[in-house]
Length: 83
Image 1: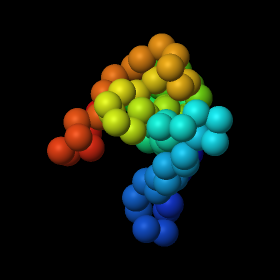
Image 2: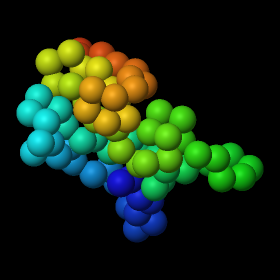
Image 3: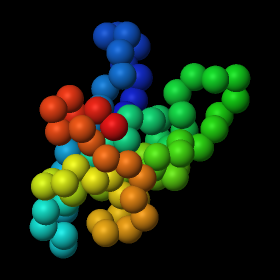
């Protein structure tokens, strides 16, 4: 999960992990802080990951889901890798 590195003054993201039980899917760092959105006046649960801190990405299509084959939460643009 993403975390703030105060020495480097930047957010550090975890690398993608291939899903052992679900070939063709990877577990990706959502980019939030352990399920909480960055910034704001008060803590708020991250919408894309539902507070889990990670989303699952289908490698061929770029579809993002809460779990492999589960409720879809977006898509990664293949050229830019943006959600």
